Amino acid sequence: MHRFIVVGGGAGGLELATRLGDRYAPHKNKGGVHAQVTLVDRNPTHIWKPLLHEVAAGSMDPFTQELEYAAQARWHGFEFQQGDLTGLDRANKRLTLGTVLDDDGAELLPARELEYDTLIIAIGSTTAFFGVKGASEFSLALDTVSQAERFRKRLIAACMRAEHQVHEPVESGPGTSSTSTEPRIQVAIVGGGATGVELSAELRNTAQVLSAYGLHKLDPRHDVGIVLIEAGPRILPALQERVSTATAELLTKLGVRLMIGETVAEVAPGMIRTASGKTVRADLTVWAAGIKAPAILSELDGLPVNRLGQLIVRRTLQTEVDDNIFALGDCAACPWPGNERNVPPRAQAAHQQASFLLKALAARLENKPLPEFTYRDFGSLVSLGHFSAVGNLMGGVIGGNMLIEGLFARFMYMSLYRLHIAALHGYARMVLDTFAHWLRRTTLPRVKLH
Image 1 (cartoon, rainbow, N blue to C red):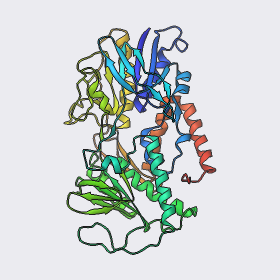
Image 2: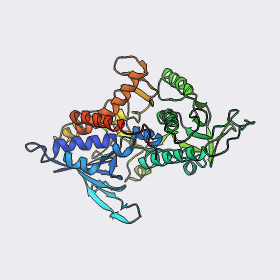
Image 3: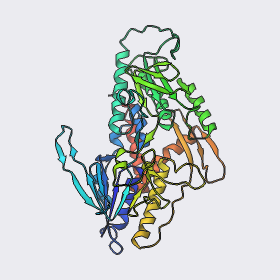
Image 4: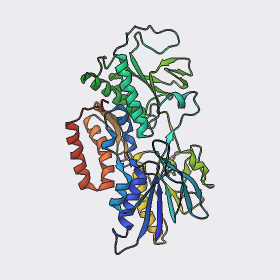
């Protein structure tokens, strides 16, 4: 049987492996073409990455949303192998997985080699610190569930400690960015993209809920400060200016302080220094200023990458030098005809590419010419937690852009995740999962308190 290996269990990779398994697994398709499908990921579970800011803010319990890869493999006719991609032998069509260790550092799984006929790389992206002094050491990224949980626990601990500290007004001096009275806790978020904006709004909701549950007696608006630092001239630079303006107004109403046009020069314990000479107090610092492809991609047996480390692919999503290797999602630099930039690193792009590859790989098995991928921009949505949502809808479909915000935008944003669940489990199970999630929420606090 033809051997498909999908490396990376993110939104695009897991959807593709699931649909390939449903189509080609022998027990799923008894009368048609059969193929062996294997999914590889470094983690044993999947969570939709756009949800990590909610995990960090405590408004989502990751353990109720995680999906076990092994269970998904059993249900949909593919195999799962846990491990990091550490090497590639293109001549022999073989990839190497690294050793998997348990929580105590003992070997759980040895290093292994897997052979493939078609390899699809979908390992996503990681945080880019851009060489800023102290950024990787003294700030937290939100690439994984463990990082998001670490931030959440540190935030709650800071709130509990601050409740018993004597609060002294601090006057702002020359070269500082503080107001006349410092908040007892200050969270600094570096990067005004979608992650930074969504986290800042979600944290304001968290502060209010913690106060309501009596976990601390701080004023949620004045004693918990949130600063969003963006180097560019506006937040959400990838979206339309009117979306950015509407979002900035909403954040300001929520008490989020925006520092626009400020480049971070150094991150130190408890503080941030900007290139203009300002000093920002930061009890907790989150780095959300950009992404890059994982470093392993530049070491894969001569596969060409761009300056961000992404694999350079053609419109068929095949790599430039090897027709047997495809790439999709954030780790792929895919042309976008009619635009100066490549296909943007968004969940909707990964979803579209997974659907495209399902058809393209079917053509490959039948030795037919491969189609070319065309990205359709359905607009962008940014969640502001329970307060609101903003975005532009159907930008590339109706020939124009419609600005949406409020309840309707919030509903559309929540629908994106439900469509991801439907792609993995089908619409019937998605409806049941939605109902079960609602039932859980009726018996749990709105924020995880421990």
